[in-house]
Length: 84
Image 1 (cartoon, rainbow, N blue to C red):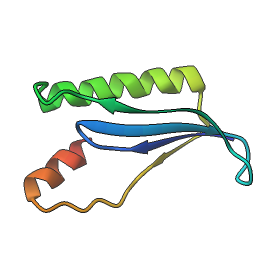
Image 2: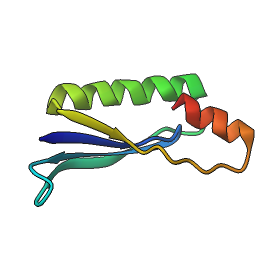
Image 3: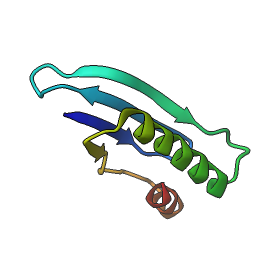
């Protein structure tokens, strides 16, 4: 099974592509999609989307896992994280 794991954030979205079984997965790729602060949030989300589409096309994952627990100190950050 091939899995795309995503740690979402507006400026630094982490990802990893894992292949194989649960006992001995192989890491095919991992990186951080870094978006400069001078890019508007809408542009950042568009860039993340484009990068993820490229990864899905290239690696053809069977499953996608997205980190779901988010702790934020301000409501504005929570809104931004929800958009990512």
